[in-house]
Length: 117
Length: 256
Image (cartoon, rainbow over all chains, first blue to last red; front, side, top):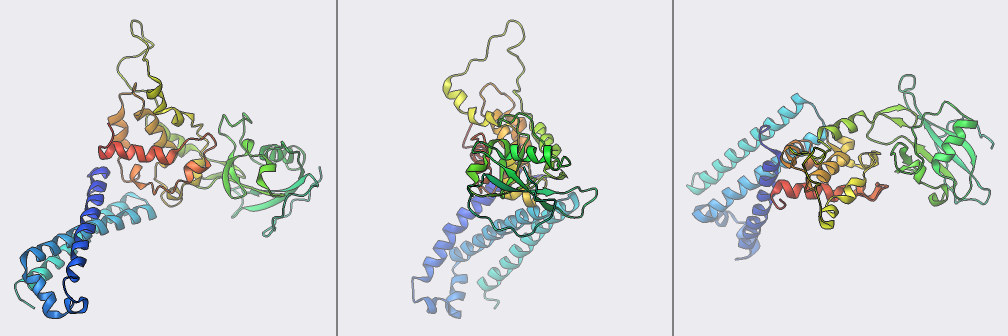
């Protein structure tokens, strides 16, 4: 990550923000296809995960928000304190935490999708 | 001219300019070798409507306290030496008239985001070193000064692309006002980034790639939050905030 040009990282940052806004908007609009409280009931939520295109969209939202969020956190931490060791720890720590969150979230989406709940 | 004395003060309530034609000048005194913190010393200084803040500091230095450390030179906003915080805002002391401050208490402090050498004098080494790192000169293989080469002509439009950015006098006020510099000591700062833009935007220059590579780092152009304080305090009318955004345009591929 530290070897990547900052402009490439920021292009990804802006891109993931735009993508997340679009997909989260779709996600919210889906709540409006039925009564809002009903859309949040257990069976309704599980049905979303069983619907492959929707589950894939949730996976993409997870990736977009994780990448955007952890890069934002990385930037904040880099501005907070400086130093070679600290900056390396922040870069790799955020990369690791982002990967862990995506893996854990993907596992949840997959398990719900195949009915392991 | 009468001195109130060299007493320190924590609280002084500002009042409107009085008709007595004198002001209270509060100067921040700090010697990092001897003092643990800065303290304000007050002086009563007579002023005229054309008196500048630098005039009052030099009057105090000449008549009341010769130990005050202040950097100055041209007295006409050209050299960029006398940058300091005047009533909390970064400004050039030689370019700020007492009459425009609308207060009979004037507080002068060293600029933020620079190490203090003593009193009002700050260490600008890092700013100049960052400025130098960004190659603030025209880069190209040929030269207009060698024989048999022609002058590098520019149209008025081409000059306009960078002209305002070439007015920078390296006073450091923009860096002092920058909120990112307050927390990120490695941030290149608006001064250096603006000068990078000044040369990138110059069509005679061929060093765009080199410069963009330098500013495209974790403490480079992307750390600007676009607060705009740099542009607000510039005494020469340069707009560093815009220069930084335009530099981003080059890195994002919007500008060539």
